[in-house]
Amino acid sequence: MTKRFILAAVVMAVVAMPALAGTSATGTNTVSPTLQVNVTVAKAISLTLSTGSQCVVNAGGAPPDYTMSFGTVDPLGISAGACGAKFNPTTPGSTPAVYYSDYKLTPVFAGQSTTNNTITAYISTDFSATAAGLLAIVQSNTLPNVIGDLTAMSKLAGAQTSVATNAASGTAITRYIGVSVAPMNGAGTLTGADSATTTYTLTVQ
Amino acid sequence: MIAPQAYEHSMQASPLLLAAGSGRTGAVHDRRRRRLFFCSALAGALVLAFWTGAATSARAQNIALQTASGGVTISGSNPNWLAGFGNVNGLGLGTPGAGVSLITSGVSGGVLYTTPYTIHVAGAGGGNRAVVRAYVSTNFTHPAILQLQSCYPAASCSTASSYTILPTSAAAEIDVISIPGVLNANYDGSLGLFVSNLSGAGAFAGADSATITLHTYAWNGSVLQLKDTDTLTLNSPSENVQTAVQLLLASAGGITISPASDFSTSFGSVNGLGIGPAPGLTVTGVGGGVLYRTPYSIQPTFASFSSATGTVKVYVSTDFGHPTILELRDSPDNVTYTAISKLVGSQTNLTSTAASTTPITRYLGLFVSNSNGLSAFTGADSAILTYTLMVP
Image (cartoon, rainbow over all chains, first blue to last red):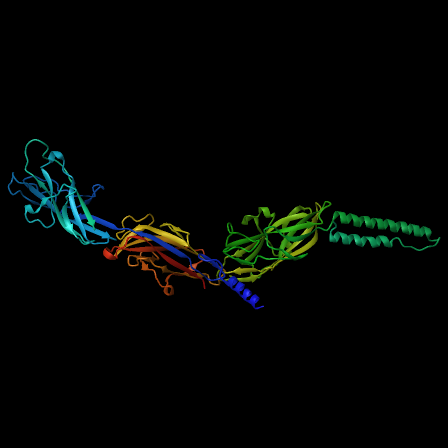
């Protein structure tokens, strides 16, 4: 008799339990489904260029990612240039003039196991061969006070020019880039439009 | 085989025939006796012929209800039969009782439980076929919640539209087996029970029962003659309307929400800069990182509750393995996001006025920190949100 009672009680208890589980139930007023949210977190890194106080840095056609134009320049520093500043040649007709501008670099990175980083740059596409020696990219990590503060940008991917070390993520830094125009004469194309491309690399490690 | 009513008529005829054979003796009255006997015999023969003919032309069609293959058990004794649907609910949740099937498609405002049953027809023949009609003679006490429907033959009863509501008056009874009727055999029909999903005023949960009366008629090609009356009382077991609740999640133009244990979704590859969000996601910068955002749909459904609204809450029941990097946030408008509670006792309230079958568009946000250094994390992680729908 006792066993039957216990069995009946168990059966009644089971029957009395809310039916189903998860998304639906009967005989009760509550249901609690779950949503599992899956995600894979990846490292992220970003380096953007933007306009400083002088020449405008425009978005490019990817590639290039950005463009900047100095307009008309000349080796004597006679032309004012479209933007930025210039250093006239130390010895006109013998040494180059330099047109330059500030710009901003903003490194951002997340999910990195370290904050140590470097920003380097090199000329990945130089000015056209016919103008070789006439035009050169120069740069400075600080405000140039004299023409000599702007030095040639590396043309070697394996030996790039250092632009910054351990820059803070998310903080823009100001750098300077320019075009050196040498006083050349003679045969060849020494006037007209030309362009070069500089590639920047941010590495966090 | 002779039907009970037909047999009864034959027994009534015989005594009359036999009584006509007794008489007095005497020569004077012989001719009268013979004349009387002749007349009596003739009358008896006519009566016998009448009754015999009546029994042949209007044999007593009758039916017996039987359990059909795949149907509920029909018990009781002729002419009072018993059956029942047992536990039912307005959402059609769970597994119906033995012998009961469920139709949800094409049913508005509830679901339709069905069961086949067998009509055993006897006494039909000799130019008279059996026609069966039915109506609800004792309706449910909650007729707005429960409603009986009929379909015949059972083989054609797979859709809701094939069922006809059984009327609640004899005058409006409907055909189960229509004219020209059928001969002696077993015929399967299907009985339907509509269960409303109503909540709020007028809702009902509990036991109820009803009785169907079936009339069996003889059809001789021109006239219907009632021959048999049976009842089927649906109280064995009674129809027990249960409350039902359901809470579903679904995609709403954002990332996909899949129905898996119970639901799952993936933000894919994310990063602290919000670079390259997966399709369906938007991303915005927030303090300390970025917020990936997606709309989704919360779909509460409930039936047979006295309240027409419920409450939906959510909390993080299992947090990410890296809670300083990842955090789930909620928004009603995709503008203002707040962190979802991690406390079961203090859950984030999504709505207190959830109406049944009315989807709620909500926004789920995933904050991803842009931190670097030793606390940084890359790799797979997951969290579980538990939603709770409660209807008072």
